[in-house]
Length: 274
Ligand SMILES: C[S@@+](CC[C@H](N)C(=O)[O-])C[C@H]1O[C@@H](n2cnc3c(N)ncnc32)[C@H](O)[C@@H]1O
Image 1 (cartoon, rainbow, N blue to C red):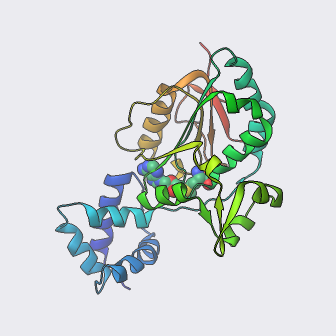
Image 2 (image 1 turned 90 degrees about the horizontal axis):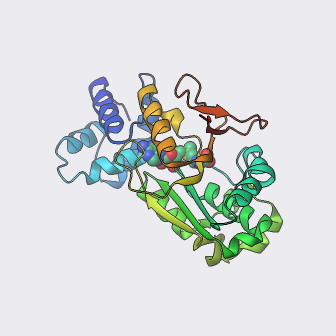
Image 3 (image 1 turned 180 degrees about the vertical axis):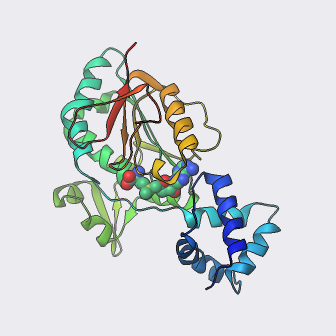
């Protein structure tokens, strides 16, 4: 389905304005691949027609669908493993020690996609820190995508998704069959509050976070947007909290107030003291 340069420019501008996702020249193939199914489901004839409809879309519903289609939702259980080892062995034990008197922990996954990341963390907590059952755990997971938020809430995964990174022992313990698929048990689903939150838009009032997972999302944004988001994360964090970024992401040259922790390949940061 051919995409003319004018429509590519228009769609890129709209997507960037709505979500901060940058679609540089050369990404025409991606726009074509992602929007072709939407063209079909909207009963339109071409991407050109879709762009035309977008220009008339006063309600913003079609534009929201386009933005949604342009998000990359790649994720898996225990993705990159190292961050979860650091969480288990170092970060969560330290936070538990420091918050022992309040018995409260605030956790946020800021780009939760279909839920594998927050559910990995929920399983890790249940498996290793049973004492947190008696704490006030405020665990929020958010994404810009309505479809992803629904997937998180349902917690239903195909066998293929389960096979990507989830140990069999955890599958048996925390999942139940749902037809040919697997659904995470209600106890874990209820641990997490799933929300829609656009990182490039207005952030709601939230509790000061002890732990922020912001993995594999900053890569889609330009430098000024990354800077703003890193600053806003700091403003919404406890001074001794931790942030995890994706393996290809860094705060270097973006925000001098973070320091990278010397935990092997974990993408773990905290706010510099003083
Ligand atoms: C590649 S996934 C990362 C999922 C998970 N954090 C991980 O590392 O496996 C990126 C997610 O960022 C979300 N996203 C993209 N732009 C966003 C924005 N402006 N605000 C919030 N989420 C956004 C996408 O919808 C997508 O689910």
